[in-house]
Image 1 (spheres, rainbow, N blue to C red):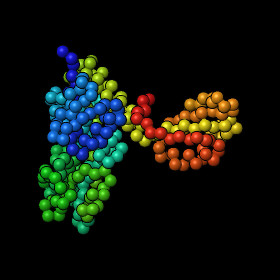
Image 2 (cartoon, rainbow, N blue to C red; image 1 turned 90 degrees about the vertical axis):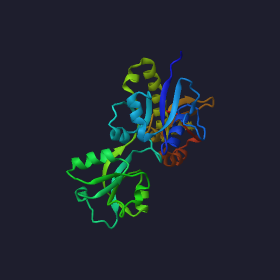
Image 3 (tube, rainbow, N blue to C red; image 1 turned 45 degrees about the vertical axis):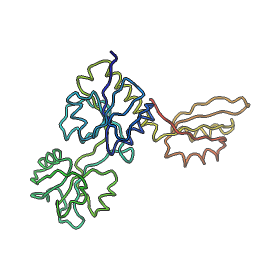
Image 4 (cartoon, one colour; image 1 turned 90 degrees about the horizontal axis):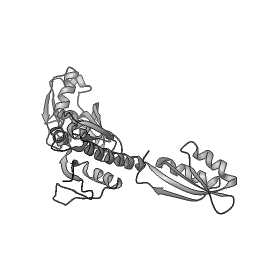
Length: 291
């Protein structure tokens, strides 16, 4: 009987970005509109869509061998799992998310100590209680089933909410008084499954490709032709980034250069490369960058 890795994929806000990342990593996944069981082209993987909030529990219990969820939900559930890798991506971009305490703009609450005896709404109840206790603050923390931003001031004095940019909080006339936790996506494994050599190798292979796909997100490749007389000047522009691959062209006195660089530098460096003699400059996207 062939072995199978039971993998949990996050359903909800992380679902779309996770599926895109897996596709870029080389995994073709088909998800039916009403199905919770994505179909992997890799038959060694049996996947299930589960809310990120519940993922760590199922991995901890061994229902799943591995899964992807936020560090926040691992801490919230107190799950004893193996954190195989940190994968810096979220719903809206490649950065960690923050759990913040927010209050109405006109609230008299200015700092954490001012929450003494107040009512707080959040989905992250367990961790919030632990944080307040560490600050010596007693407050009533209620579980929020959604639309947490609209709870203040009538249903709560403050909220603890997840944010990437803070724009949603501002739109609801809320201001942040404290960040209590930064969180990023983690690839986690059941500790018993991690000790299984086949499953461990399978997980390590998945992580390698996912990290390679993430590394490629902020980089591009550049190809160009450079006459010998311009080679030094072109190399002086590229040397502060990465060492390019250089090969001699059939045309005498010409070289082909290829380099991987940060995408954010491209708009500045291409005009400069052109100005010092590079020709036929081609920029192309990358699927994976494996160190």
